[in-house]
Amino acid sequence: MRAEIIMLMACTLDGKIARNRNHYPDWTGSADKRMFRALSMNAGVIIMGSRTFDNIGRQLPGRHHVVITRFPERRSSKAGIWFTADSPRHIADELYNQGYKKAILAGGAEINTLFAQAGLIDEVVITLTPRIFGTGLGLFTKELDMELSLEDLHQIDTHTVFLRYRVVKRHAAGPVGES
Image 1 (cartoon, rainbow, N blue to C red):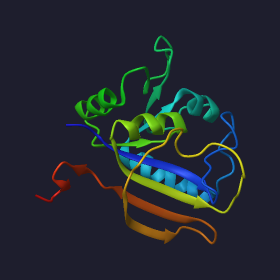
Image 2: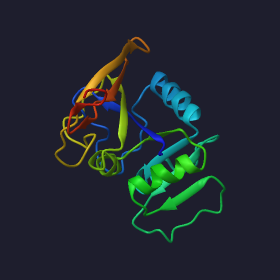
Image 3: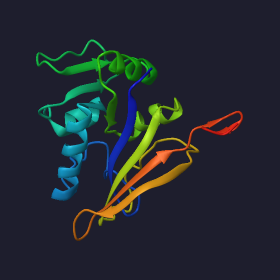
C-alpha cells in the first residue's frame, strides 16, 4: 500500500507554475493560499523538491515535509522535515507506513515529473490564477501522457478557478474497473 498522491499546483492561464526556478510563489491570491493550506493540512504531509522548499524559505506549520534532494546528507534540526533522495515509490510507501493516507505533491516541475513518470499521481488539483507569464516553468519538465477525468470545478474567488481531476489509471485490460 502507498499514500495517495495529490498534485496541488497554482497555475497561470498559460500553464506556468513560476517565472523561473527561483521564483517565490507570491503571485497567487489569498483564495489559492487558503485552498493550499486546507488541502495540505488535511493530508498532513507535503512532498516538494529542495528548490521549492528553499524558495518558500520555511517549514509550513502543522504539516510534515518531505523534501526531495540530490544531497541526501542534507538535514534539518527541526522535527517534521525529511530530506531524502529516495524514489517516489519508496516515499509513497513509507508515508503510508507512517500513517499518511494522502500526501500533497507541491512541486516543482522536476519532482512532479518524477512522480508522474512513476505512475504515482492519483489526482491533479489546479488553482487557475488569472496571470500570464509568457515564459517560465510548466507543471512538468518532460513529455508525458496522462489521461484525466474532471471531478470538480468551481470558482474560489472572483478571479480564481479550482479544478480537481482524477488520473485515469489504465491496465492491460483497460481502465481500472473494466474487465
